Image (cartoon, rainbow, N blue to C red; front, side, top):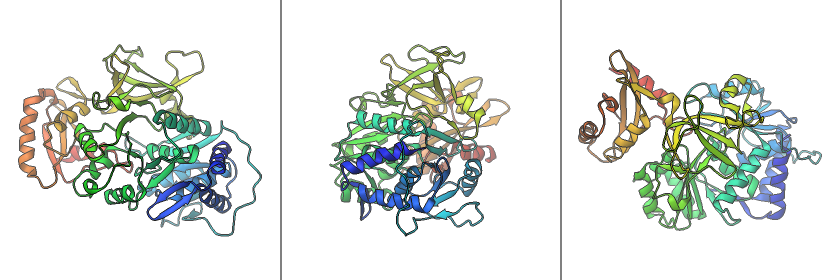
Length: 495
């Protein structure tokens, strides 16, 4: 089933058996050692081709080897974020009929299949040499469920292999590169970094512990050349609590970001802290692997853009009638070409809403992903994301993008973080609500007062938040994205 991914890894092992595959704290695993550990996992799990195995585990070499062991058996790895609630595990277990769970820590004994923290000893299982089948399933990744019930995104093995190679070619990965990955493997961007190691042979660096201090230690100890992160990781690293400004960051040649827009203030701090690094702004979904990437030379000139379509893909913008939008007109972002997911596991209705016939070639049998994200292409064909279709508000009869309000308030520099949501109001429709987090060691009440005054000066009445709430930190889902569902519930409950 997923044998093609295993065979791709084996070719890497044969070419460079002693090259480091994973550097984690004080531990080093070569590609040959990772292969040996993978075969032990295969013997432990002993799943049949096509069966599913849940991964509810933290970023470790053991977890990476478990993926390989599952592939060696022709089975399918199913990712659940290790910070997700146990209900997500039960949901995935029920939907996929998984035969085993690989978990860093899982105390519930009422689950219907065995749970393993490490492979059992006793040597590798004797298995026949697999035959490659690139069209079979390579993974199922369950989304965080931040906008509804978690979905199991199914990707073919050939799509994963092709995606990892396109990323390596686009960013010019070299054999000596080392990717620092603080993003959970169960999040599509973290999964992408793991795939870069498993399928293209780039060394993976994992921080220990999984926090800003661990990142600084990993940079000092292992000298990574690529730093793959998301805005929450970078903001936390640069908050002033970590020793990053006393850390030698000269080994990092490339910083990559995705997940959500990277605030310009954070971008500026990254350039100051990593003066030898280029910055790559990216966009993609679990359902598309990678959709767009801004050339690093344009990062300072176009900080709000995520660039043109990624090689092998095409981005178009459609209006509400399904008609392509001209430049600078906002509509839904549609992904065509390489990277498209196979389906949502056991959910044909939701699959049909997102994976639809190609709007530019409807009779060809080709499909496209309707992302649900809103944005526009500029005159150069570079994508600018303006928000989520399901987050749009209507205040005083006017459609409002909460992301635009966030950007305007964040640009004042008065707050460290801003999140915008709404609550229903009989008079104005959607009453806009702002949740803000102050800068460390600042006078938060004074800064909030100044922010309210600034908001009155620079926002239209229909964009103006009517309620402000000062928080110690914004709630986040397991993938480190702002938990807007939680904030919306809080906005509705607050008086």
